[in-house]
Each structure stands twice: as structure tokens, then as C-alpha cells.
Image (tube, rainbow, N blue to C red; front, side, top):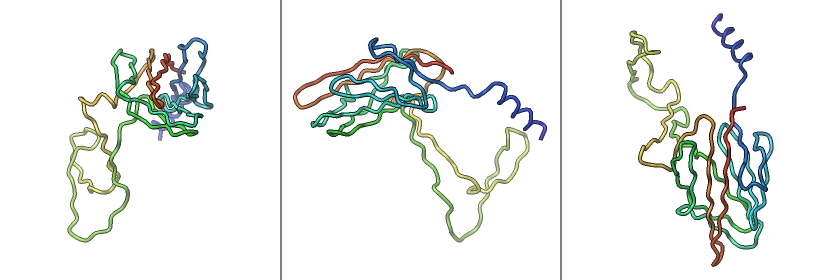
Length: 190
């Protein structure tokens, strides 16, 4: 109980740090991107709505035109805080609709979706508890198990930490015309 009180006091004194973004380029659209409201930037023919969510930059790309716009993933990229380039996925944005891009994209998770009913002999797993030297039998299905898909060779999924600059290039195709928009963001601890 004492450790719980100490942890609670620590959290209250330090607060919960989170990250937000500052759009720095294009200069005419510069502004703060927070977590409570969208920051809207109109670059013809599209409209971008930016928001910081759990340390990630969420971009809604609105297409108010009467033609489908294709985000060309093979020609679009994000340069992370360390200078590494990451690809974006292709995305068709229908007329008068929007598509969403999350930077960095969350890794897919695989999990057990719920309880199972079955018959048979119970199975237990013996493992370490809290890295102690004591072994304790733990039923295999007494809690959900989450598995994160991780492949070091897949540069599409990546993590972000700390402060720094992100560069983003969105390249599009509409009818017979190709165009693109470039952005620079500063990630800041709040």
C-alpha cells in the first residue's frame, strides 16, 4: 500500500508527459498541432487535418474534389528523427471523402479475443515470476496474450521517441496529373 501511495504522489508531482507537434514547413501554414483539436491546412486541391494522438501524428487527408486521388506509397516517405527514411502505404481517397495516415504506423497486434470453452486435461506452464528465482505454476489461458509483429527488415513499421524533426512527402496521382506536398514537423515534449 505504501508503494502505491508513493507512486501516486510521484505521478501527481511529475505529471504525465506527452508529445505534440509544430508544423514548421510550409511556412505559410506553420502552427501548433495538439491533441484536443485538428490543425487544418489547405493545400489545393486537398485539405489536411493534423492531430497528436498518444505521441503519434495522425493525418486525415480530405479530398473535396469530384475525382479519386491516389496517394502513391512508392513515391511518398517519412524521414524520422534519426534521419532514416520510411515508406508509406498507397491509399485511394475517393471523391468527397478522406483517408488517414498515422505516423509512425502502429504495429499490428495479435491477441486471443476471449474465453474458450473446451474439454480435456488442464495444462499449466512453469515460468519465472518478476524475474525472481522462484518458479510458480501459471495457467496458460488465465490472461490475454498479446504478440507484436516485428520484422527488422520491414521499414514500414517503426517507433518514435524523444524530440526532433520529421519530414514527410505525400505524392499523389489524380487523373493524368501527379502532384505532391512536403511537410516538416518538430516533435516536442509537453
